Image (tube, rainbow, N blue to C red; front, side):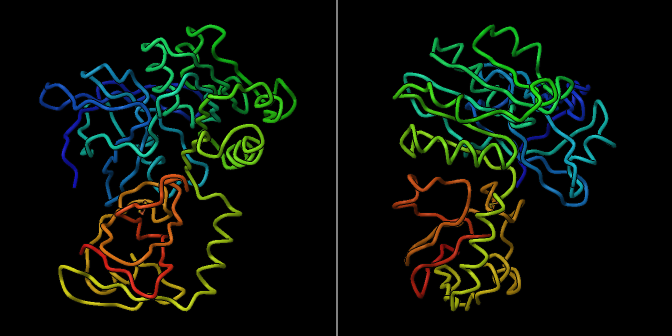
Length: 321
Ligand code: FES
């Protein structure tokens, strides 16, 4: 449920097809703190809920700063923000939540593509304030699309910009990662081809748990593989511990769909395993985590699952519902 009422205090073009939004407490109060990597769930007209990363200074309790790109294939959220949102409007939002946490490390490399700069900018601000060793590579199709350019330029040579049109090619991930020192934590957010390249080529130089990703969309190859895996399974049963009912989840339905069909209201937003909204407690059985919120290194022993995409390895799953 939304629990903050925020007012749009600043709304302006930040870069080509990117808006900068500053939100303040509608009653003039101090805002809840947030960690770098955190996002807000913003409630938009028509029941839409969209998640946007907080990219301002985590120490600033007076405003939340968002950078919102206009999605080429918008399902309504970014199109409404770009076309209809006005200065002074009130927005209902969640308190900040974080699925993309910074682990404590000696040094960091941030790899941003396009609007994926937003969570990484908050991380860079935090690192700078903490005196951490960090650098960033920020790629965009053109200079006009580099959001928060002036703020990033103020970090000097810690930030390297790459514009595809000037370089004549997309960012080459291999050379970028070749010089990464052991002990570096890599955080990446951007379009799927960049993320996949960092994932695949990063694995050659760093341990898997030193690579961190925030996905905007399910990576195409992974989504296809998961769909095939789900289709090949026989389905499984879910036992709802609090209501005492059980349902069969067939191979072609998600747990979330089965719950909805049977009258259960489960909060959701992306329905793709990206946002964490549908997180549900697990009391028994073995979940098959297929989301993009929890990396494989964090899945062992998880007592929750994202029911829009995750399934079961056991014949039955007991859910805290
Ligand atoms: S609804 Fe977004 S992770 Fe399930």
